[in-house]
View (cartoon, rainbow, N blue to C red):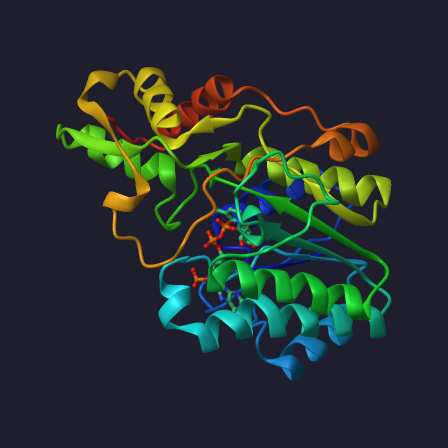
Amino acid sequence: MLIAGARGLLGQKLVEIFKRESEYELLPCELTAGTEGYIELDITDRQKVLDAVAQERPSVIVNAAAFTDVDRAESERGIAYKVNATAVGHLAEAAKIFNAKLIHISTDYVFNGRKGNYSEDSLPEPLGYYGKSKLAGENLAKAQLDDLAILRTQVLYGFAKGVKKNFVLWVLEKLSGGQKFSVVTDQVGNPTIADELAFAVLKVVKKGAIGLYHVSGFETMSRFEFARQIAEVFGFDPAVISTTTTDKLNQTAKRPMNSSFICLKAQTDLGIAMPSVRDSLTLMKQQMKQAGIKFQ
Ligand SMILES: NC(=O)c1ccc[n+]([C@@H]2O[C@H](COP(=O)([O-])OP(=O)(O)OC[C@H]3O[C@@H](n4cnc5c(N)ncnc54)[C@H](OP(=O)(O)O)[C@@H]3O)[C@@H](O)[C@H]2O)c1
C-alpha cells in the first residue's frame, strides 16, 4: 500500500492504522526526504509517480497529499492546481497502468454551501480555487480509472507530529494563550477526526469499495459551537470565546457557509459509525497528553 502525503495529518493516521494491520506492506511517501523508511515522492512529478508505482507495485495507492491552504490557493493557483488536480491524474494513470486501486481524499469545499445536507448526488459548485482544484482532481481521477474510491471529508482535525494548524489546534493555542477571541457562528459543518477518516480508508480497502463517499462526523455544528466543545473537553472556560460572522474576518477565499454532509452511503455500504465530537476530542486530548503536551 502506497500512501502519498504520509507526513500530513491524515497521512500519519493512515500509517498508524495500516501498521497495525500486518497484511499490508506499507510504502509511506513524503514530499521531502527525511523520515527513515519513507520514499521521497512529489506527486506533481509524473515520471517519479510512474517510476515509484512501477518499482513498488502497490495494490492500493492512497492519496493523502494535497495543497490544503484554502486562502493561499487563491494567490498560488498554479501550484494548487498541480497538487490537487494534475497530480491526482498522475496517480490515477499509474494506478491504471499497474493495476492498483486508488483511494483519493476530497472535500466539502466542492459545494457552494448555500443549502447544506449534501449527498454524493448533490451538484458541486465550488466557490474558491481550492474547491475548484479539488473538484478537478476528482474528475481527472474518474476519467482515467474505475478502481477508484473518492472520500470527501470536512473540518478535519486531529493531533499528529509537525502538522499544520487545524481548527482544534488553533482554538487550543488561543485558549492556552489566555486571550479572549471570537469564532464564526455562520460557518457550519461536520467536524471529523482524522483517526476516523483513516479508519474509513481501511474499511474501503477491506471491502474493495469503489465510488464516491461522504465521510464526516455525524454532528452538524457551527465553528463557534465546535470551539466551545473544544474548550469544555480540554478544561478551559468557554466563556472566553465570543461570536463573530464570516464577513468580519476578511478571509481571502470564499467559503461554503453550510457544507454539512449526509453520510448514509458510507454508513450503509462501509459500516462507518463515527464517534461523537466530544468523544473524538477526548481521544485527541489523550493523544496530546501522551505526547507530553500541556494545555494550560
Ligand atoms: N484539513 C481539512 O479541514 C480538510 C477538509 C476537507 C478535506 N481535506 C482533505 O483531506 C486530505 C488530507 O488533509 P490533511 O489535513 O491531512 O492535509 P495536510 O496535513 O496539509 O497534509 C497534506 C500533505 O501533503 C503533502 N504534499 C503537499 N504537496 C505535495 C506534493 N506535491 N507531493 C507530495 N506530497 C505533498 C504535504 O507535505 P508538506 O507538509 O511537506 O507540504 C503534507 O504532508 C486532503 O486531500 C485535503 O484536501 C482536508
